[in-house]
Amino acid sequence: MMDIIKIALSQVGITEIKGPENNPEVMKYFHETGRTWINNDSTPWCDAAMDWCAMKAGLKYTPGLLAREWLDTGIKVKSEDVAAMILEVPVLVIFWRIQKIGIYGHVGLCVKKNNTTVWSLGGNQGKIGQFNIMPYPINGVSMGVLGYRRFWE
Image 1: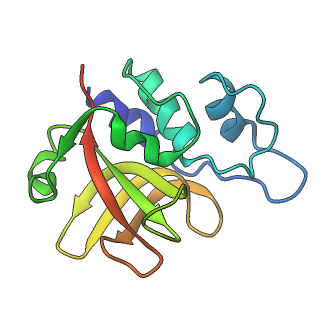
Image 2 (image 1 turned 45 degrees about the horizontal axis):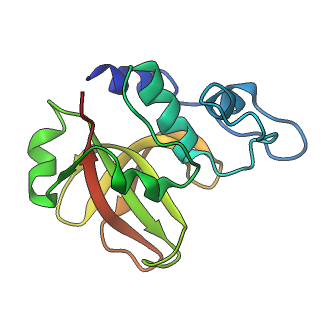
């Protein structure tokens, strides 16, 4: 199950291409997980990247393109248990974006957590749309944590 961390780390640095060209490395996240109708890397791809990593690790993944779908996948993890678990069990962090109730979100693998911040390993992060590790506020103004999940075998 920890293979998903190694797979995700192997993708660090992959960045979408702004403009009419597409990065084939980003497009593989969509196409290899069955979203063949997606034709540009400017489509939000954090969920597709996490689905691709899960698929490569032999784990279940979400069928759609919304990061919030991960809230219904796997096993719920209590916030207070995350920091102790992440070195032994991969834990997903699911965020809200723009508003807590809505469709916009973000998903990544939790690699570190303290009382105010969670570090996410995932795709389409930062202003440049890159696969990397980034810190995010747990309770921010325009983004925050909706929940944590772990994979089931």
